[in-house]
Image: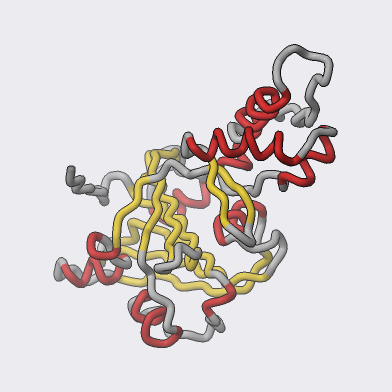
Length: 248
């Protein structure tokens, strides 16, 4: 896989194209990069102005244009990032896996629950909005029915919650967050696609390597839209259907 070329942070001061339009085009190039679409913060306006040798107001004019188009979002004290085009459902329409299964009268099995503290890589750090390398709690759960597992979950939790890793995670996850840590899951932002099973996932889920899996990324936030949990779910495509009701 060919690596992308580094971004050239420069404008042509001798061009007939207005500087704010050049900056706007530069920003449009930046926000198409995978790392920025996954949540990496854009350079601060004052830093970008210094690099380009232009005024901060010129950078702000370009940024305002993309924010107006709902391509960028600013958060005071955090920075500017790309607006993620994801499917979102409210808490009244979704629940944790165990709550979903319980509501359907289905008895599921926890085949494995592993908990450990890890250093957040770039993807996890961007999702949880913490610095890369910060320690976060990681939980991996292999779950299914009596006949075998059909989903493997990997969750990363924001340190602000206060989880220790010694909790009884056989309980409903969101019950633990709400009752024990006064942390209320309010919004689920999701991205769903199909992927082939890697060798390790195939062994966990008892399928052949390359078999189709439903891959779901879920970012759970509190009422203030602050990240709580970044969850990766790998489902056997022959055992699970993801249904979505959309109201106009």
